[in-house]
Image (tube, rainbow, N blue to C red; front, side, top):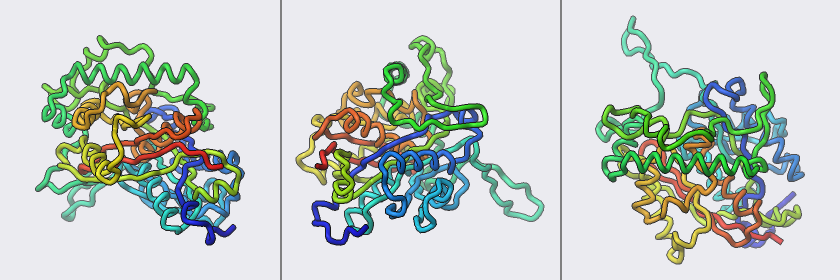
Length: 397
């Protein structure tokens, strides 16, 4: 199929399908499933649902943060049985990788460099290889380490939990407020799960222990008292606990991004159009407030846009402290974001989380049939980066 003669307006990038796996706890329900197999299940679902010819897929862009390296996009495409002619590429913006992959696909369409892309992310903490640093001297022992460096020592490169404590102290985010936000996340996610709101976006995963159909980390029995009784994890006198922070997780998420013209030619009637996006840097020691800088940058690019007018905001909940600090700085009421819960309850599979934000917007705005509604995806990233993307639910006919 050729798209060389589409008029310019038909090169608007539109998400026309969005799916994720259930989110499993690290070493839990998805522990035996490799990252490429998580992705392959979604690829097959998207191809089957849309009826798209697999060889019309221009590329497969996949974000990954903690895996073993290599080209996970190509590996997943081949594992799913896509034609050998379909390439793939790995994207690494750490926790923002999945969202970055979607933005990259959309920008490629805007540049008329392709008309159809699979994009998203994956993380399998359970199967990720150990990282070992080569000894600097003969006879010295190797050193195991948890992650790559995000920033030089001269600037500061704190662990994520310490960075969250830095934000809590810098912006005076009290422990009780963090716990209350975490409780809200669980209550909303549990209510959404019980109402079946997540099921249309979930691709069941077959494992050696049976079929995994639901998110694993929801805690319907948690309470403010239970959260208040948890001890700080990172600093003895800190406020960040296992209860007001995200868990470690496995999961994958992919969307199908097409040009508006291609979607119309296939008879697809609605989708989620990317309007704009922005990335920005902040002090790595306060990395959780990255979305403040990226959102303000986006607002400067969209002078007619008001945050109060956005219909749905999905903000990745790595830590309650960083979410609340960012929302305060942007003057966004905390009770207006993540209306069906967030990563504190559902989980944060690093490379997939940004794509999950888009899938949650797709469910709320497109699957729910809200044409003309706008949505914002926001995520803070290791190394002191924020990433924000603006979408609109559109009719394509």
